[in-house]
Length: 276
Image 1 (cartoon, rainbow, N blue to C red):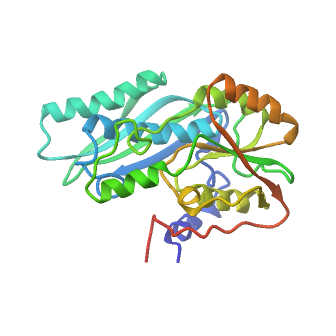
Image 2: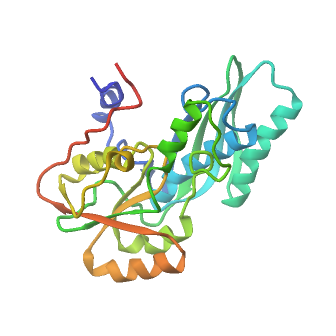
């Protein structure tokens, strides 16, 4: 049983706002992500500054994927009792560094004492034209930015006690905000790749009621790699040249890998969120 889907379904029937990277209410988008020690990271893998930065970035990624510009952040941080003032300053430095980069104002939240470091962040963003997961049209081209697979490889290294580069996408996701805001007017549907390309395609398939015809086989090491935070989106083929031109301008690699067809798509990757 997929416990994540089952739990979410307990609320879906009561609202139409659930199902995307964030909830759209008027011109505002509200998104929330948890980043918990021993679930999403281990303290020996990253510095406190890096942990805070990633916690912010993975949530900002949701806003970008919906064509929303982050404005405010609420932080909830469960702090281990043994943390000293130096630790707290380092943690705060990471939050503030990313907030400054994306012009976000941290407006409050909550702090509690805990046995481990757990972080939950709510980002409040503004949008003129939200892009949802449900907008894929038949014959749309499907595309993702960057390269996939390195986050899975680096996670495996970390789990085996090895070190990875500070530039690893697993440590610090690379967000292509400027590029995506420019191409947004050509995009029909989008989301970020947090749980793996194949998982995200299944989600989009269900919401858009389409299947996918792949141009080439995609290896599972690429399609099942989570924690990538690249952008996945669809667009009408008539905009292909314009999107490619903007990608070149912003130095963003594009991978056009499939087109939308009648049918449905089922992911074959193991669910890494809630395993029985």
